[in-house]
Image 1 (cartoon, rainbow, N blue to C red):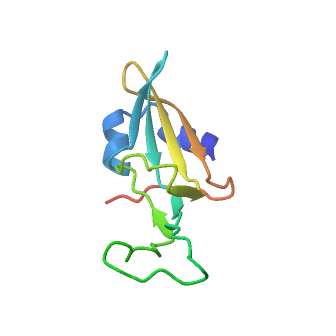
Image 2: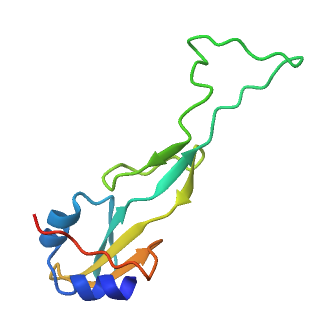
Length: 124
């Protein structure tokens, strides 16, 4: 999938990538230029654990009402990094766009996308 995405995005500008994909999650500088991270992964939330005392369930009060929290969470790329102690990755889907110093795409690394699926952007 990385090769297909690289072929699709090669020499496109940063502005075009952001226009098509929206906000990025992280920007990292490297020796050739920089990398933009677009994260569309799904996460599961680790529930809060309140131990039972003498095999008796704790009473539900306003303080512990959220004992059972939502079990799945899907990120948007613009959301900040999640707390690794509370979230576990279920399905990682990440696009890493590597740019040169002229703000042109030189490589795309697609993690979690199968090679049998071809992703193409629709025209608006």
